[in-house]
Length: 316
Image (cartoon, rainbow, N blue to C red; front, side, top):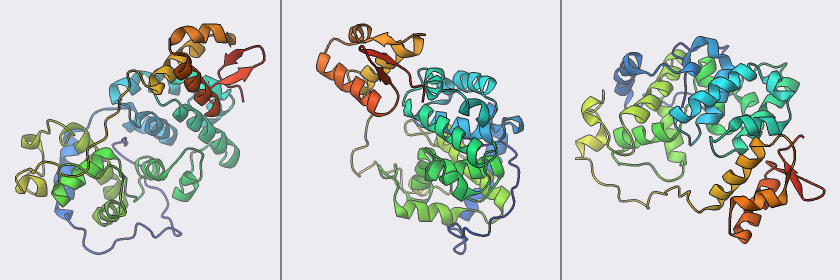
């Protein structure tokens, strides 16, 4: 989702060969046009600037999961002002991370980012680790985020496979409109095979293909007339056949437990003292769904119950 425009090279890794070249990359002729397009059209985003550093890249990756850039920007900027280093966040209660997360949605990401900051402080001297395996071992960091931070913050050679990249590869290489609902082994293998051998170029390719999916090769109303690889795109050459796979999953919100959870958390974020059950009861009329949502927040560690029917954001 993110990348600095000039990633800083890191020492070569000697213990990870999973991304080693497998021969001539299929579609390797795509690298030059896509990277050249990125050089000219990439958005000027704060996490892409050199001053963001690895921590800024990591914060942006957590925030941008399933959340558009325009919603992330103000929260990201305030976050980095308040917590410019992992240790600054680590010394705060986890509930403060949830409070500062605001309305970004999926607030468990805030707890995971706090947990990662604590681990970075305790295990790595407060510096975001450069090693991919160390990144992957941090709380809340999965395959995508570890690869993205290693690539975008440290200029390493890893396949960065988010929704935007998967859509670009599905169309340009596989000739289909949309990728599968869940990432497949075949997609991971293709992404590895497509990586340029040079580390810096590979990092640029990851950032550029992601930006292409975000701005041009979009899920709807794709701008093929402005795409730098439209002449090589397998989907375009096949006549842009309609998607014929499983229905694409939507993300309903209104009336869901997720909406109730958001309303409950909004009350707790605004409160400076523990909130009584009676106040939380006002946010949603349906008592069974409201109780289920509150129980889920407690189970996820986002809300801490106290004696006397009081609730607050977590302190530990």
